[in-house]
Amino acid sequence: MADLAPEVARIPVEERLRDSFDEMVVYKNLKESNFISAFKLPSFMRDWVLKRFEDENGNIDVEEATEFIKEFIPKKEDWKSIKNRIINYQESVKFLAKISIEINIKTQELSFALPDFGLGFKDTVIPRPVWEACSEDLLKAEENWGVVELGYQYPVDKKNPGKIKLMSFKDFCPYSIDLDEFKEARKYFTLDEWIDVVLGAIDYNAAGYENKIQKLAVITRLLPFVERRLNMIELAPKGTGKSYLFGSVSRFGWLSSGGTMSRAKMFYDIAKNTEGLVANHDYVALDEVQTINFKDVDEMRGALKGYMENGKYTVGNHEGNGDAGIILLGNIPADDMNEYVDMFQSLPKVFHESALIDRFHGFLKGWNLPRMNDGLKICGWALNSEYFASIMHILRDDPTYRAVVDALVEVPDKADTRDTEAIKRIATGYLKLLFPCVTKPDEISSKDFMRYCLKPAMDMRGIIKIQLGIMDPGEFGGKSVPDLRVKSLEA
Image (cartoon, rainbow, N blue to C red; front, side):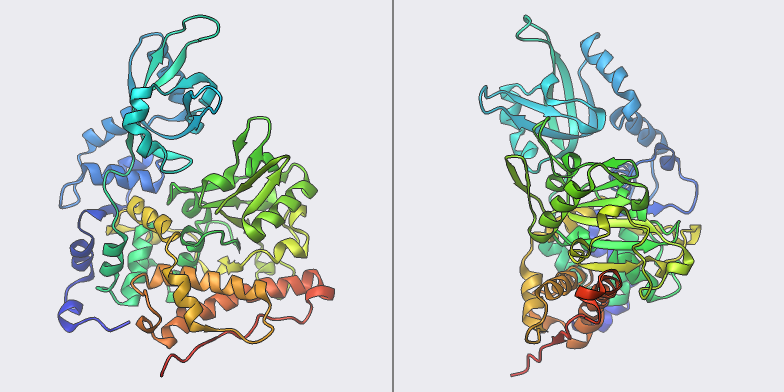
């Protein structure tokens, strides 16, 4: 990438940020006790509220924002009250929710579900006029965030019982996102400045980190946000912010903490005839994975191996596919923070097989990250988390970056295909996150590509390879990642 023009470099970063991204920038103050934190909103939703009620100087109308949150962002425990208003008082109620729809093949009936409130398809209906008006937004994805308006359809007889009906739906994202504009805006920042911009977008204060290694470790966590089916393991000390980042930054991911995980929940539920987590999300992060109970170890292991290899799964007679990456997040004692010892011994039994571990593309050394503290919380102008999460989601579908990686990477003869694919996939993710304006091989220097994309990808895959050698020395002992290099593109 070319250096910034002197006249651009002289402009303060904050000013460039606001000029380049305009209304996509919000003022975040997470260092101080903030009224909005009391509502425990995920960051993508919090920034949506901030954007709605902040003035151009970052001042927020606390009273209006509070009333809006109370009225339009109910908690799960508010659902009975909402039902009471709809059914017994015939009110129409509007609020922000995640919605999925179902089209019945036999009856042509249209229904919806609100998974966060436990409202299922059998108790709902979408009238035809509402469907005609809202179907485009409702069909954008398997699940969509938006403002739903609910009313009640009275029972007619036993065959036609009462149901909650959808009266209107407005998409959560109130603006269009232009990926080309995002790519162009990246050109007005140096790499170091851009790293800080990305950290601010996910609520972190770049100045709170000791060095670039720590900053890049945080950004590494975002790889599954931008790259399809990127499978990753992170072991880290407690308190480094794993749960927050995977659970709050993006509305397109899923964080599962503890409890029981079954094949039905992960892939497909035969009894309910519903797709599982991998079909509806960009990633499925298993937090505190040591505490998760896998219902049927052999069944889950078999399903995971097939899915992580090619994105497909078969449950009974149902064949499905998904694009979600599988992320393992676990805490690790200080004595085990070493890739040359068995770090996976405390993982659940389902992961005690080398063939499954081999399907994880890379390992993130979470011990390179500091414990969360007030100095790491953003206080200043930053990219709207909801906007940035949407950008990352869109980047998953952009094939340009993989084409650049394929053009730049030289693969030695007889290199292991699984290793090569893992490294290229991780390098592609880094390219999207750090150099989104690069669309051709000659737009990034060989030095930058090697240092920030290819080398870290090889290191991440290398740790998986070392652990495989410890786990299964007969199959993987003494094997290392292929020596991938950057091609010379000179004529």
